[in-house]
Amino acid sequence: MLAAYLFAAAVALKAQGIPQASPTTPASTSPIGDTVALAREANVWLAQLIQINTTNPPGNEAAAAKYVAGILEKEGITPEILEVTPGRSAVVARLRSSAISDPSRALLLVAHMDVVGTDRSRWSVDPFGAVIKDGYIYGRGALDDKSMLAANLAVIIGFKRANARLNRDVIFLATDDEEGSGDASIKTLIAKNWDKFAAGFAINEGGEVAMKGGKVQYVAVQASEKVSVNVAVVAKGPAGHASLPTKENAVVHLAAAVAKIGSYSAPVHFTSIVRRYFEGLAAISDDEIAKWMRSLDTPDRGDHAQRVLSDANPQWGSMLRDSIAPTMLTAGVRPNVIPGEARAILNIRLLPGDTINVLLGELTKLVNDPQVRLEVQPNGGLAAPPSSLESEFYAAISKVAAQEFAGAPVLPYQSPWATDSAQLRLHNVQAYGLWPFPVTDEDLKRMHGDDERISIASFNKGVDLLARIVAEFAVAK
View 1 (cartoon, rainbow, N blue to C red):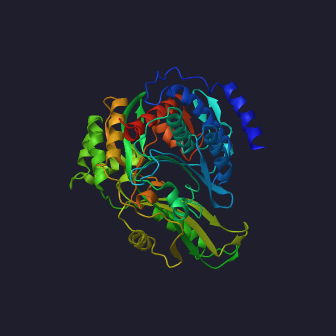
View 2: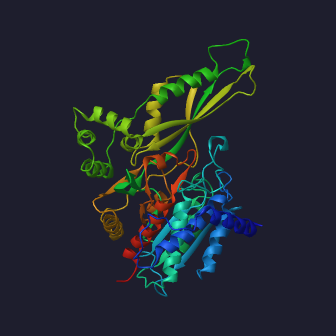
View 3: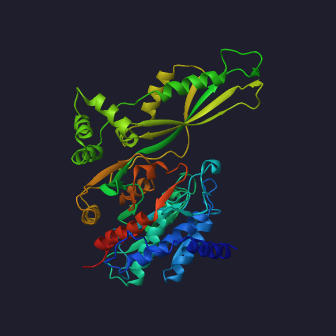
C-alpha cells in the first residue's frame, strides 16, 4: 500500500514541476559529478518524505525508515533498519573506505525523520501534501528536518554512483524521536547500536546559511547548543462549585505565577562561542547594530545592548541567557467546577554550564506562592561539551562555505534549539550543525510554525554545498 501511494504521489509531484531544475541553480562541477540532476531526484524524495506523516507523538518513523531504506537498496547501498521501540525505527548505511573501519575517522551524516505536530486550520495548504507554490515546497518537515534527510540521501548516493575514493567511512543515519527526546531517541539508539554508526565526526541540522535580500550574509556552524528542560508549574487549591469563588482558586494562582515567570529575564552569560559569533557578526552588520554587539560585554552599556539586540532578533536574545517559554496550560473538567489543580508547562533552554536547580530557585522566589510548585519533567536534555573550532572537519566546512559564498564569514554558533548532536558530543564526536540551504529569517520563523516551507532553489544549492563539504573532508586527494 505504501509503495502504491508513493508511486501515485510521485506522478502528482512531477505534474507540479518538482523534477525541473531551478533556473537559479548553476551548473555543477562537484567532485561527485552533476549535483543539479541529483538535487532534482532529491526534490522528489523530500516531497515523498513530507507526505509520510511522522508527527511525534506517535512518530510512525517505521514507514519513513522503510521508504529511505528502499531508496538506498536501489542504489546498491545496504541499509539496516534499527527498531528502537515498536513502530519507531532508525536507518543506518555505510560507504566504506577500506575493509577495516576506523570509527575515530568516520564521518556521520545525521538527520531525523520525525516532525512536530500541526494545526491544519492555520495552514494555507495540506501540511503533509508537499504542495509546490511560488518556488517553495510546503509541508511539515520541509525545513526541520526532512530537507536534511533528503540531502544526506543525495550525498551518500552521489558518492556511491561516482565510486568516489574515500579516505574515511561515510555513514548515513536517519534517527527517530528527535522532537520528543523520549524512549526512542538517539540516546536509546546509541545505547543499543553505537557500534553500527560510531564516528569521530558528524554533520547534522542546527546551523544556518543566513540569507537576506537574495544574498548570503554569513554561515553559522553550530558547535554547541542550549539544553532543553521542561518544567511543570503546578497550582493546587480547593475544588468546588463555580458559583462560590474563592481566593484559593488554583487557576488564579497559576495565572499569576505564569505572568511573573513570563516577565522574568535570566542574567546574561557569555560562552566563548557566543562571544566569537557576535565579534564576527559585528564586522558585517550595519553601524548601529554593530555598535551594540560590541557593547554587549561592557559594564556600562551591556544591559541596554542586550535589550536592543533581543528586540532586533529573538534568536540573539536566547543565545545570551537561559530562556523560558510557557507553552501549555491545563485546568478544569467543566465550566461550573473550580478545579483543585491547574498546570502549565515551561520549556526552558539552558545555556551550557547552567543548571536547572539554580534557575528554579530563582523562579520559586519570584513566584513566592505556597500554593504553587515547580516540577522538572523527565527526558530533559544533557549539557555536552562544545565541538572543537580547531578540528579538521570544522576547517573543511569553513573552507568550502567561504568558497561558495565569497565574502560571507563563517561563524561558530551556539544554537538556541537542541539537536541530536548533543548526545553525539557526549560520545566524543566532533559534531557540527549546518542546514546547508540558504534561508531567510522568514523561513526560520515557519519552523515548528505554520506553512513551513523551503525554497527549491535553496534546497538544490544545499545538496551541492553538502556534497562539496563531504568531498573536501572524505575524498582522497
